[in-house]
Length: 235
Image (tube, rainbow, N blue to C red):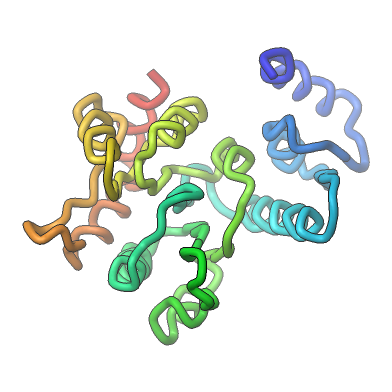
């Protein structure tokens, strides 16, 4: 993996020189499709094993095509990992926050085991129509590293699990912290303290405050604050 990661800069030169008509790659190099798509080179990600993996590849391509239409650092990536689930109230408040922020976003929406519900049913009525092309909802899984490394991403709205924090730092994406439990509140506090993130504060009862989420989300991609956050994250 270290060898693959070190090859990313050389790979960009190869693509620029050869200008291939198509790139076919596997999932071990998340930076490869991002580089190719940034140069308008069509890309297919080869994923082995069954129908589920095929649908994963389709999701990955859809995400990249949508991202390529957005300005640099203009999109918020929203994901809470594979073991964290928002309550119905938290989902609705976050949806409202994303709507009112008027910021572009990709939201990976997961549901707890046994919760048989679609994204359309889980989110406020009319949400998809009001958001339009500004938002992309992906159910259950998305290629997080590939999305995070895309130049269109300007921030990562996260629960602040330590793995997510490290990955966000690696790609220079500031974190919009929405911690849930365990070490996550402490991680969020640390990110804010070092200037690499902002936190969506809760009230004294642990509930999301209606006007807090849109304000923090908008601040994260606003030119002055966003640039400062990205510089500190890069450091």
